[in-house]
Image (tube, rainbow, N blue to C red; front, top):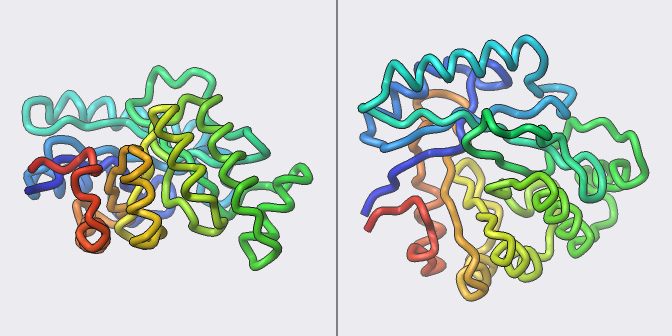
Length: 233
């Protein structure tokens, strides 16, 4: 059994420590079949990649795809932000991206009432798990997201509802290996609902690319390995 791809890694373009090339080389060293650099999208005030900087990143990833063709599949990803109820900073034209990840992150400007609510909740305010799940799912559906990152991080979500809706939409839920955000019981609910799970390292330095230990341990404990799409048995 092995994990064949890591679609959630960061570089110094946002708040990581390594270059895209270093992430790719580490993935090759580990024998992964594909790796994505999925930087934070521009809606994040603090760490979002936008404008000319985003253009440089995309150009670098295109070059790496060509350079390492036949050795590893380099994917261009984007980790996007929920910005309002059912809204996000997923680009309208996502044709240049191989994978779109969506989640709630601190650092999004509170420009409306719902954004203020989720900001306050992320700092310990009143929790609304069902509404939070509805918002993330509506934004994921509207933007055609592929993966919902680290469910329950910063905002508690209604996992049974999210898992059922994500299955219907064909969206995967991430078991994040930097910080596992779903309990064993919640992971089993995901399995029973039939939603696909994906393990991502959320690496912020090249040495952590392909570090799946925490997520694999959680998946084994919950008995959900068969639901993880990037595991090759």
